Every structure is written in C-alpha cells, then in structure tokens.
Image (cartoon, rainbow, N blue to C red; front, side, top):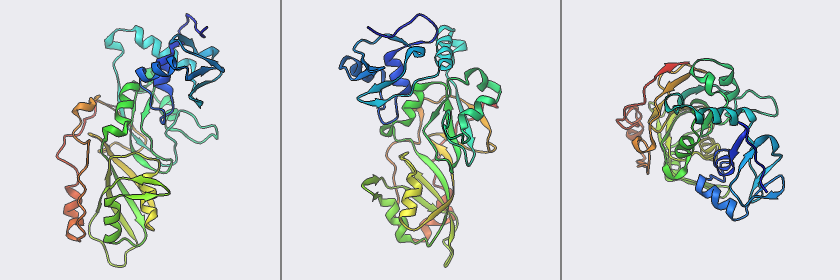
Length: 312
C-alpha cells in the first residue's frame, strides 16, 4: 500500500526521485521507475514497488539502494503542481544567470546557518519571485569560488546540463600564488590523478607573460568536468595556491558584465544548440609564445553568448 493523497502536496514517486535524488544517483524518470519496480526504493522503511503519487507531508525518509533522498518542501511541490495546471504561457521554463558571491553556498539551506545563494535569491523580487520555491542550481561552485552559476525552475534542463557525458565547457579565471613553470602547465593539460581520482586535462593559459621570479599569476582555465574542487585540487597538487577563482562561462552562457550578486534572466538554450561542449582540444605546447596574452585572448571559440532578457 502506498502513501498517497489527493492534495496539492502529492507528487508521483518516479518524478520525486528524478527531481530530488542526490547527484551521485543521477536518476531519470525511467531509471527511477526501474528502481521502484526492482524494490530498491523505500519510504519510511516500507518497500515501494508501485509508482504511486505520494504525499510529501507523510514522508519521513526516502531511500534508493540505501541512499537518502532529499524530501522536497511542501511549498516546492505545491508550486510545481500549480505550474503544471497552468497554461503553457504561464508555466514557461526559466533560466537565470547569477553572479555568485564569495562566501555563499550554492544550496537551498545550510544547517550551520551559513549564507546560501538560493535563500538570497528567494528573498529578492523580480521575475524570480513566483518561482522562488522551485529554483534549482545547475551544477555547483564551492563556497570560496565566485562568478557564473545558472539557476532554473526546470529540473530536467538542469540535469541535462550537469551530466558529465554532455561535457559542457566551463571557463574560469584563477589567481595562483606559487612558482609556476611550463612543466607544471604541461602536466595540468595532460591530466592528473590525485588520491585515486583521475582529472581530465584542462586547457590552461597564462594571462600576459610569465614573469621570472613572480609568485602571483592569473590563469585562464577551461575544462569539461565539474568534479568537487577540481581546479583547486589540480593546481594545489603542483604547489599553486588558488587565491581567487572566478567562473566566467558555462556552455554558451557567459558572465559578461553581470554585477556581483545580481541575477539576470536569460533565454533557455537547449543542450543541442550549445557549441561549447564535447571533447576539448588541449594544446600542450610548452612555450612562452603559446601562453602569451594573444593566446589567452583566443581561448574562447567564436560563439555568440546567450543575451540578457531582464535584470533582477
């Protein structure tokens, strides 16, 4: 017997799992349905083998193969249900480009009381206000990283752009302290294994010229992965301490001149339309010429960035 109801707080179990399951599970609706049929899903300790609507008010815990799934808030489900019952015109999928601040987490809530990006956006107004209970970050940035983060009200779109197999290009500016050599750059470009984790090669360029004896350098870095603290770990592995890290683009979305802390509504660009994705050609030429200002300036492909719609 399932846990179901007829109120606006119900959601089909497969949809709940696909939308709110942890990123390491990465479940689609069909994969969630297979887990349910296979007896891999429990609610309040009860095995669920039928894909029923469930009432989030009656759920104490949800697990998939023993892994906890975040229980959505009542307000989120109510908002999603209202959107689903509206016409297409009023249930449009939305995307916002946000200039994340240093010191805030990319999450809905922090039990330790640290500032979070989603809570800050929910307190704001503009076009975000009517979607504030269904905001979903696309990917993550660590607490001390600033720059571009995309926010959407469409879980499916977020999941598409996050999938490692889709390999959207991420571009960063990093200020590093330490002795930088062309040998270290070459190793980063080839890829490195750290504590048993393999990191793919990244396209790294020095902004300007490498100064002899200098210990502070700005780099432009492009990668196709979004592993936890990837850039910091790879650079620190070679004795380079990252003192500032700014993401400037994600796929065809760019930070451009969005002011710090500001959210800008941008068009939803389908994954199939993105040009900055897929396998990345990394130039491993160990010469000062390849890392000149000219080389850094031509790092990005000739791609038209997604333009603003409204400033929030």
